[in-house]
Length: 466
Image (cartoon, rainbow, N blue to C red):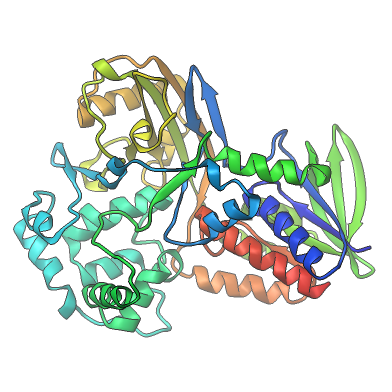
């Protein structure tokens, strides 16, 4: 019986195993599937912390329905009844600029009335259909260069840069448009511009009976599960419990007589096991350490994928004395405002059951590539900084009834300009090692939907190989 070893029991690792079991069962094949996780709990960054009646997300707070993969997984697990839809208030998104919060416009009329952009900045966006065409296919354009070319410098500063911060905690002038936002790039290539593309898509979808409106958000509806996103990985873990081995570190991977040799350690005891197929479902920096003994060139290519550090501060308040209605999803802050936080999510307004009755929950992002030194502040200093920033941006002066923070020293992978070339280098080296698969959010999408999609593809690839 072939043995498949999956390194990492985060979403990507467990999702690969889940779909692999299904795929093998469909074709009457069998395999031994082992999942090794160095942590004491499975789930990776999909973790929900419960404290004083608050449900606090350690990382992502849900997934969007603009792609089908997350909902497909929920259905395949049979837990559709546990899905919760974000509040209608979550459609309201804000940007902090010139000392106040500006709601992002959702209609053309609201766009022209908004004070977020100057009249000149709004007119420049209207010029978008006549903007310069895209560079040659060989050029990996940055998000920043794309935004300046099509929308203007002010739109980059007040709209695009905060969006990139909110998703990647990154710098738009360093991020690859092709790798970070392939749909936007394809929209321009197919229709010749964003406005033309949006109108064309609206007409195409109307013909198919699909409603499509203008939105300040990324599209789709944000959903989660009744007890937080950890319910998703908890369900996966329960289905795969026999094969998950916690507190087991995989220190390195080597090749021996056509099979892979994993060097493990558990409670100070070392062990070696062989496997026919390896799925490295780890961050790229962990894959570097795992695979350097196997292939130094592969490890060097993986090391070219950097990560941004980020801290998430969670503060719970008595809603009556909060001083802000939290009527929306939250807000982001452009770099030019020179604030010490990146933005805040108003979690208790987005999803039910995130805060006890009469309370409110705010999660604040600190650090990123903009201010990495702030992400690593001691918790007491970090929370004091966050409270000061919330006073200045939201008018929140009351003392929180609950406060804690989570530090991710390498939190979010950065798809920099040239990321596609890095993936080509990685794939070229992997061609020498049949049965070795890399699967995490470091490569082809950082969101939950992307991880599920890539995991299904990995499972299908393995099943076909067997």
